[in-house]
Amino acid sequence: MASLRDIETRINSTKKTSQITKAMQMVSAAKLNRAETNAKSFVPYMEKIQEVATSIAAGSKDVDHPMLVSRQVERTGYLVITADKGLAGPYNSSILRSVFNKIKERHQSDDEYAIIAIGRMGRDFFLKRNMNVVLEINGLPDQPNFADIMEITSKAVGMFSDGTFDELYMYYNHFVSAITQEVTEKKVLPLTELDTSKKLMSYEYEPSAEAILEVLLPQYAESLIYGALLDAKASEHAARMTAMKSATDNASDLIDDLTLSFNRARQAKITQEITEIVGGVAALE
Image 1 (cartoon, one colour):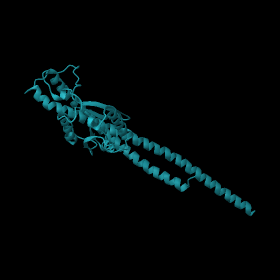
Image 2 (image 1 turned 120 degrees about the vertical axis):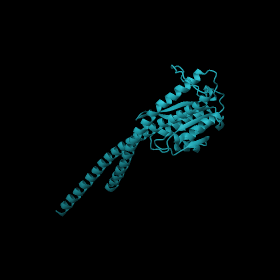
Image 3 (image 1 turned 90 degrees about the vertical axis):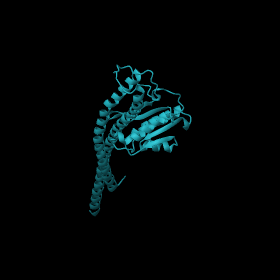
Image 4 (image 1 turned 30 degrees about the vertical axis):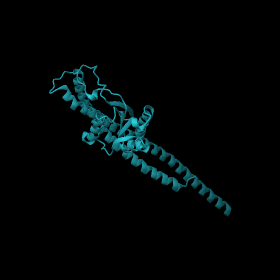
């Protein structure tokens, strides 16, 4: 049985850990509120640019833009969004497991795919397994703006245009609620899944549909990536807040158990001392 001093030391260290996890929980909660606001505020822009791009593409049947046309797939691109840090429960592991299994299921060799890693956890995971990472970015702020990822998004779109890969899929954690995040796969390129079922507005444009789509479609693809990043950041903060709350609750339960053990050990020690005193008095008589 552990001594009173050992139990007391464990109680004190667990209390300090609990204070740290509680502080991290509160910080993540504050970051979540802002990240959720950022993600929701970007949705109207993304919906509008999708509507405009769909309207022009659908209204110009003779337009044959490369980003709108499927081609024979010889290489697939995977853009994977993870965090730079851990301590976020299954946030990173769930998405990495999903991407890893999908790649092993679809491809026989490294020449058949290319990975674009956003986040240090994803980059380290793939490099450790000698998987084909062609582009990476780490150290993004907790509340990123478009300028922070403009370079990697434009490169990702450019790699499709120059034939580095023939299709691009994006994997990230979609924010459902503070306690629920879903691993999501979204096809970014080619843009063959534009929703033309809705009633589309008619636009007048100059100089031509081709010239507008040449500028608009890359911006739309980049907005998809940026919107997913904002969504993923909200999911990351929510997952970390939930993980830290669970850690704080576990620490509280452990403190209660250790306190009970400490009291029992102290009671046993006092009882033993009383027994020894009574035994000594009896021996003197």
